[in-house]
Amino acid sequence: MRTKRLNTRFNIYLLDNLKNYSEVFEQKFLDCRSSLSETNVHDLRVSMRRLMAFTNLIYNVYSDRYTKSVFKELKKILKALNPLRDVQVQMLAIEQNLESAPYLTNYFHYLKLKEESLIDDIKHQLTDSYINTIVGLVLFIRIELKNKLRQEQFDIQAFYQKTHESFNLMLEKSKQIIPEVIDTIHFLRLAFKKYRYTLEVMKPYSEINNKTMRKMKKIQDILGAIQDNNVQFELIDTYLKSIDETSAIIYSPFITIILSRRKRMVSSLMTKIHIIEQVQFKLPSSKPLASNQQFHSPV
Image (cartoon, rainbow, N blue to C red; front, side):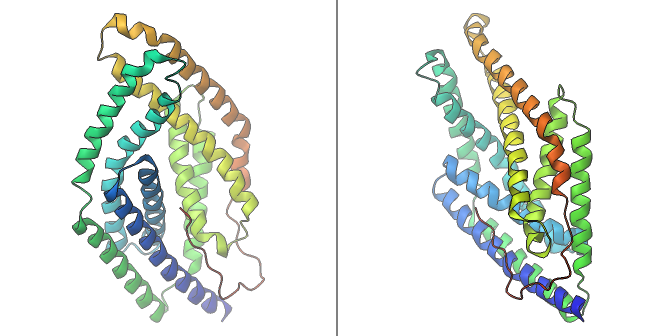
């Protein structure tokens, strides 16, 4: 009987928060359509990743066509937004260095032109048709979940299992890191983000506490900084290949700084990598869960 009540509460929790995630995404989408600023792009990407993790978790349990479609549709826009986000992050970093390193001015203008071009391309994809498709698909997912509840086909244990699998994948990627090979760190970052967003969904129905989430943030901050550093190197490398060798040579000190920072950040990551083993998903204790326990996604 308790298992049935738990399944019912968890199903209601999923329904409520799926609606919440969708509404946050819709608002951030509209904000971006108004202005593709760095802040708006960041917020939209976060809301998309949360909604993708949420629907992907449901898909991995029930494999319905609606959750798969939401994931695929969101991924299209995310793929378009990622290069813009990369350029905007680097513009902010370069702008802070222009006074002390004026030779970066031409590179900053190069990034600015790239940003404008990307914005022009993305604007055409932020349509009413697209947002209506996402909202409609989420509505169908919620209807499907309600049907499963009525048919008593709902089992929270399956969601627990998928969360454990997500943790195990992240742990596996952490053990495969080769500090000198940046791709191995990138693969950990992808698995880490998937687990963290999944954990946010399951947190109220587990023994994961805020201390654990703070530990995860430490690792994610380092992984994000390493990713930004790698993007910075790739963007300036592409730029330097487009100009003459004499002009490119003046950027040598900046390249040295980028690689030196990367080395320090990777070293810091390796000293903290053991934390990943401390953030394993834990099943709830036998203590009853509050009927009104609910999690809403912050952005």
